[in-house]
Length: 286
Image (tube, rainbow, N blue to C red):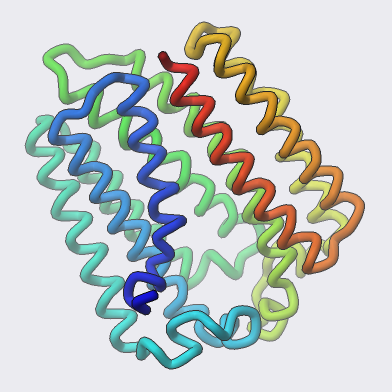
């Protein structure tokens, strides 16, 4: 894979785009502002991944030496410039969306999110829980960003779509928090060398497993609310049950075994569970 494509982690960037697309599907709105919103989210997320690799090149040399920077396929200067370009283009798109919707909120969300991604990579990632909260907040904001764009794309502002996107964003926040804690557990050795103050380093793997497991279970228990309050149809519950099973299994595994291999497995399980939930969101809206 081309290193400039690999470093933006297209899989993760597409996951963020899916959040925007899901809200568009739920609202049945595919106008120009939401199309531009998907591009802005993809570029901003890509920029966040690049700047994260820029600041994490020493840790990655231990944990993931095959990545573009530690492997020598992209220089540090090129990576920094590339991240800056992606952020700038995404902000310009955010400003254009605000112009088209006559609402400043989209531009503010893109700008503040880009700044938060930079600050996360530079500082927050090394702070226990705060860094995890930042990433989880950014994930939830993808849904809210889409909801705001669509709500102001019509002649009458739709509070309903903003409320729905906020609901979904909250559950995305919980699921992302669980995965972030699990990933920190997986990367604990490299993070120790960099003297990072992640939750697993500060409080230990066992307590980290309790927190990650609790978040997986909490998201699973609360997610049916979106059916019972009338947001999604019965098909949502059917598909959601598969995701809930995945999350419960992930919680069981992380509580049983906190080894790096187990954490890597659980991280993948949570990611798969999130993808299933996204499918449930889409099908449940029909």
